[in-house]
Length: 294
Image 1 (cartoon, rainbow, N blue to C red):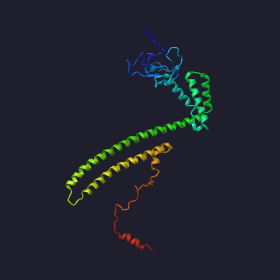
Image 2: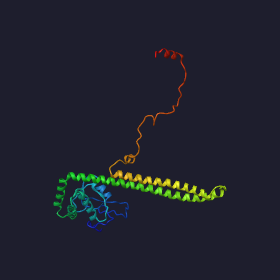
Image 3: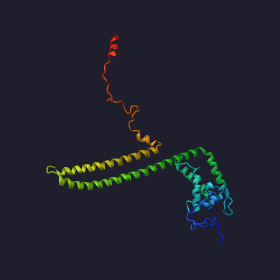
Image 4: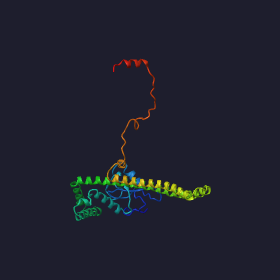
């Protein structure tokens, strides 16, 4: 039996259970950021189901946890590792260019980030680099948390705007298609109506007036759809501005509308009463009223 080279594991083979994608096409591989050794998802569930366990790769003494495993995104593990390290460093060094007085200071800040990423990726003076990263996170804890919160808010805004743009494009595509279809139908209908009305028109009717009436009807229908498209664009712009300015989209859409006060009478009192007062005269009550001195 050929012994497996653990340093050069085939891309479609799990080195632990020896399962490959030829026999199991549904197999999924996962890696752990602690050591970036590739293991299939079945081995991850089997080995790490009871808790932390050493990596099954020979000469790897890393203790791994099941919840740290993730799917591999890049074929090159060095690129995968660099992305993880860069994400970790940028969560601490998260200042923007606006936070610096000059562009030179911002460039020095970026150079410091790249130096830390390079050292962690290629394991150059790893202890000093980790201590440097830890010390910076302690000294700038408050600003780091504030910048991360702002970044999350900006990401949420970006997601909302992307969702609004997808909805707007879908609705705009539908209206544009309806406008084109309606124009085509109206043109065909116009031709048919012209022939019918000219054939059945009385001698006292002007054919030019008939044509103008048909054109007016066609323009009225197409303009109605174009107005809907314009209102859709205005609504999208208002919603996008509301998301960017941290406003409630519903409030931003209704801020220019007149507010109708609440009334328990369903709008207003009835002007015309649904009943009629009887004019019956009671002699007894009339005598009492007449005895009252004025």
